[in-house]
Amino acid sequence: MKTALVHYWLVNRRGGERVLEELCHMFPHADIYTHVYDPAQFASSVITRHRIHTSFIGRLPRARRLYQYYLPLMPLALEQLDLRGYDLVISSESGPAKGIITSPDTLHLCYCHSPMRYVWDMYHDYMEQSGRIKRLLTAPVMHYLRLWDRASADRVDRFAANSQYVAKRIDKCYRRASRIIHPPVNVKQFSYSPQRDDFYLYAGELAPYKRPELAVQACNALAKPLVVIGGGSMEPMLRRMAGPTVHIMGRQPDNVLADHYSRCKALIFPGTEDFGIIPLEAMASGAPVIAYGRGGALETVQDNRTGLFFGQQTAQCLAEAISRFESSGVDFSAADIAAHAAAWDAPFFRTRMEKLIGDALSGTVW
Image 1: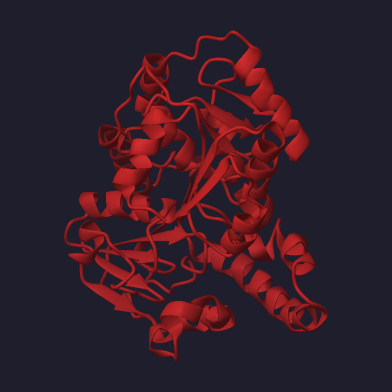
Image 2 (image 1 turned 135 degrees about the vertical axis):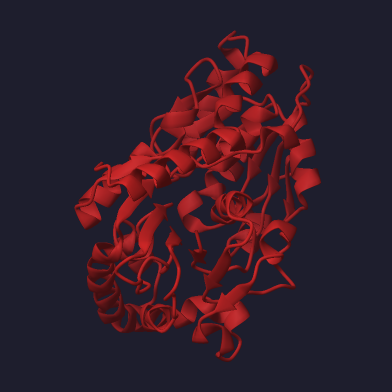
């Protein structure tokens, strides 16, 4: 089948881009469509060997750095992409991607990482973080995007959700059924050691909704060693906040992150994620996970076997969980934790996606 893959933007390599890489393995001759592509920042040989088309957003001034400011234009930009002649279109949705227009004979499958958070369930959180003028300007734009996002869901023939948590949100926002296919984790990239070093690890984007400040505050209060790997808008604030036991490393290459996964005492995961690949990467490296008990972590972390949960998203509650982790006497076996993570290995994702596409082509309803 002639196949197109549609992804919101290619400016860094995070969980959504790793899913796109697996789709590229499945469809080695597929064309890729996206709003913005920054080859200088986006290091993925799997994706870059495909033919990549950008919408007109990519030709606007400073789009590679300020692409999010062009969000109101992205629905229009998607609809200008010409996808006639494709048999299969797979949109990778978290930002605007699924709103493309396809031919009547084209199967459009949407792999949904999340309905756009900033127009749905986290709308009020984003508005609270904005100044008065920005709120006045943003509110009508978000209203328009919400209407368009709901209407564009009807252009999708079949939805796949990356977790039960996201499947519920797809039903809530779009009133559409979806089949759950968890994202892939290339567990062969990670190794574990039964001997762990005496530091905790936070890894991931330093963005407000991921709540990295809770890890810093809790380890400051307990005087526990913490390594923070990741970059984002909160990095300067976290550097000012960090006490003597907290080391902010910023963005690091994959091999450095994998090394810290394999040596840390535990990963701290304080945010609410749609799924969360980072906990699985840590578990593939034998590391237990101390996670906030909401969202996708509930589908991957097993309490008192591969980690433990804390119930309130506060630094105090996280600090109590760290203390409980150290005093519980539970033997968190690195081998058992790594074996648990193997159920999310990449070949399982490809098998499930192939079955989903086959069922969609045959008209199976879900």
